[in-house]
Length: 88
Image (cartoon, rainbow, N blue to C red; front, side, top):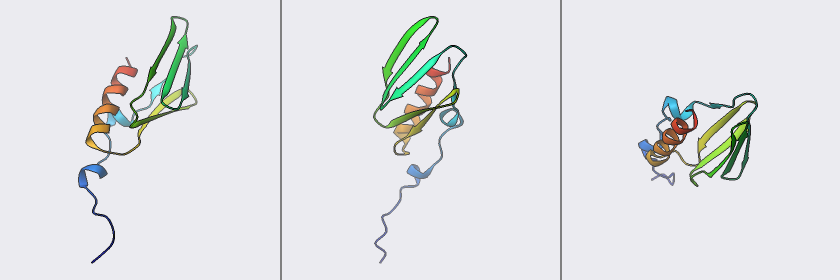
């Protein structure tokens, strides 16, 4: 018998297209990520929020990329809801 852990197929499924899509940062907007704290500042003011502990964010060039800490159905739902609210 193998000592390898049994993998759950649901955990291996890829994220939805919306969850994989980076969020574009408009010109004149500054985004900073410190751990799970995200801060956005632009001509209309400032906004900050804390990401769910199962989602990581990184700023790469003029894009914010979200990634799950662990790929589960819960993180897929969180990714889709965060990405859709961030892109509007």
